[in-house]
Image (cartoon, rainbow, N blue to C red; front, side, top):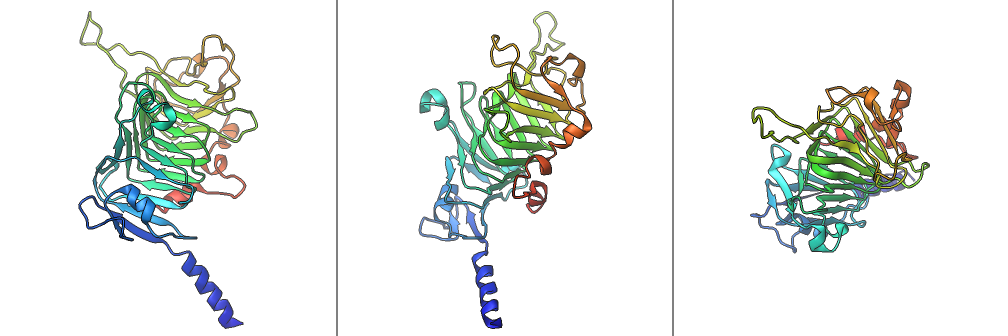
Length: 334
């Protein structure tokens, strides 16, 4: 009986073993390899399975001009950028909606496998101000992004499904550049807007859905500035909004976050002028900076109490029925 128990323990341990592979465009890898690959997609397609473990894909510094897809059949994948910072490993493409046939065909990266992780990587769509052009689509439950950058213009980050945690990361864009219906928390991150527009377009469809976006312990920054003709030594800033409701019950909470001066005093916007009193839940707590003007916010938004804000802490908002602890999981990454 003891021998059988030890065998079971050994078998379980073997099944839980992690797999480590390398991506190097100048290395010896090929589709025939099981450890070395020349593109990220090759590694995703051909790395050995890890039935109960995790697949670690170590990516050497470089610019990877490819579109990648982490399928549902590849859960527990971790992409690790091996550079000094996320700018050293860049996954980039330039598809846009008018060219590709719609927003949902433009992404540089698509992540569908659950428990996905990325650390020290940039995901980029370089199409520019030509309409919808997605850098990454995330439909992974219990996804973690740490020390990552998401660069684009309109619709940069499609946080669409599942629980997602973004830590020490950077997201930039101009219009609706964080959008979708995931339950996502952006913690100790920077959200940067490059032209007048909207940070978020969250798409919750019912008040009972446990989805929404939380921006906490972060900074919202802006490079919206043009010199007026009369006095080029001064700067005129045009406003932007923290969000508008892509779907009726959109939910976004911004708390403990520094807000810039050119955030419009109303803070939030309806989707259209005819939608005067949206059903969206837009709320703030304990924000700072020149853009934190709680008394000037649009009437249908909310200012939270400390007790109400506690429900949006990462470990609470993303806990779920399985008691997931995204903060503890993120701490395991480099």
